[in-house]
Amino acid sequence: MAQSPQDLKVAILGAGMGGLTCALALAREGFKNIDVYETAHDLGFVGAGIQLAPNMARVLDRLGVWKQIEAEAVNIVETSVRVGATDAELAHVPLEYIADTYGYPHMVGHRSSLANGLYQGCLRHPDAIRFHFATTAQDVTFGSKPSFKAVPRDTTQEPYRVEADVLLGADGIKSNTRVAMLDLLGIQAGVKDTNQAAYRIMIHKDQVKDDPELLALISGNKVTRWIGEKRHIIAYPVSNNTIYNLSTTQPDINFAAATNATYTTRGDKSVMLQVFGDFCPMVQRMLGYVPEGEVCEWKLRVHEPLPTWVHESVALVGDSCHPTLPHLAQGAAQAIEDGAVIGKVLAKLPDTTPASIHKALKVYEKIRKNRAYALVELAAASGRALHLGDGAAKEERDKQFAALREGKGPVPDKWADADVQREIYGVDVTQEATERFDELFAA
Ligand SMILES: Cc1cc2nc3c(=O)[nH]c(=O)nc-3n(C[C@H](O)[C@H](O)[C@H](O)COP(=O)(O)OP(=O)(O)OC[C@H]3O[C@@H](n4cnc5c(N)ncnc54)[C@H](O)[C@@H]3O)c2cc1C
Image (cartoon, rainbow, N blue to C red; front, side, top):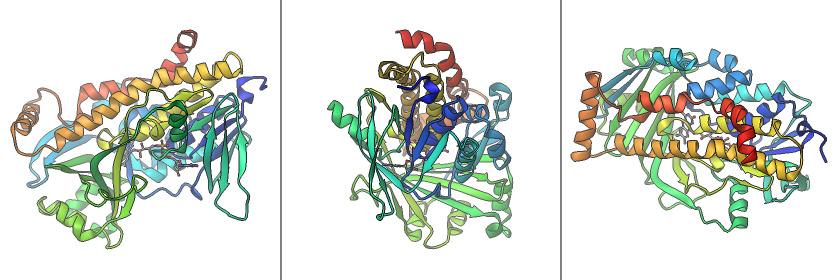
């Protein structure tokens, strides 16, 4: 048996935001036996932007990787919610107060910059963390020595079985670990169709050098949301204001008949333009810059909430247990919070018995589960409010937007609401794990 928690053998399935954060957090707590298994050949993330909210930045800073990520990001000082069809402003919310209130500004960046920052942080611990790329984990087993079959993509290599003291399933929304855990526990918690899909688009500054309106948006410090019935577009500059990132949400048509395993597809540019055909000319122009053949559409799926994230010495992390709609921009932030808490609770283990490991993982679940699911719910509610069609509910929402222009009331776009921001950014889960571990472990 391992002498100290730091000697425990930890296997992490998936090198996404959650898996990388788990590895880094554990290495920084002195763990020296961490193996990360990743299906992909490398961290080749699709080109897309990501919001780097203060609760995420706080964790990244403690893990020593924020400065590098921040250097490539864009500081957001305001947000504007606009009518898609006319570009009329429904609400304008200043966000400069966030840095003073929460210790970190609200920034936005490139996904690859975030992933790479975490990865570089991991590479600073070469004696502790080993990466196994192009290796898929299958057939997860539970118990005091959880295990899985590692299947190298290179078919000349034989699959092999890996046993660990702790197994962390950070394998994303299609998690094999989640499926295995639910099968074993006889829990039915299927994939939920949200009937929504998203295009993710990046426009480079040199593409719009002759378009002053778009150039101003790329060079600015603003998140803009254009909303319409059942659809919206959120856009912001990333990569030191050299790229404009657009993420849309629209009713799913293309995936409706696809299997649950299909999450992305190459889209048709003319269909995309048609979906936003009644949006204002500037939005049309933006969408027009997307090169033919580079339209990528993502299916937005979520899961039913799970009764547990932990079984014996196995825990689920990130999208494997709390996938969310993107409307609060908190999916990766929540996976990163998971990783930070896992690092803390395992470091605080009083001994290395499987019973204690299980209890420590349950502390992780106690700290994280209600918060993550509350934010999943809030993201769905915000999407419903943004996508309203004509009727009483939309009138009520637009009254709230109007009141806001006079400085009163809540923001229907929850992402920009100060009370919601307090709930999300004002909570320090790493600190909570440190302070409450003994009480929760003993309970
Ligand atoms: C349109 C859209 C916009 C978004 N915008 C934001 C945003 O602005 N801010 C934000 O915080 N979040 C955002 N998100 C959410 C965010 O991308 C996810 O919540 C986050 O990436 C989850 O991280 P993860 O590590 O849990 O999973 P993933 O990032 O999906 O990583 C899982 C990893 O596991 C690997 N894997 C899977 N199965 C196996 C296996 N069997 N064996 C080995 N490896 C495996 C995968 O290859 C992958 O690398 C957005 C999502 C969408 C769809």
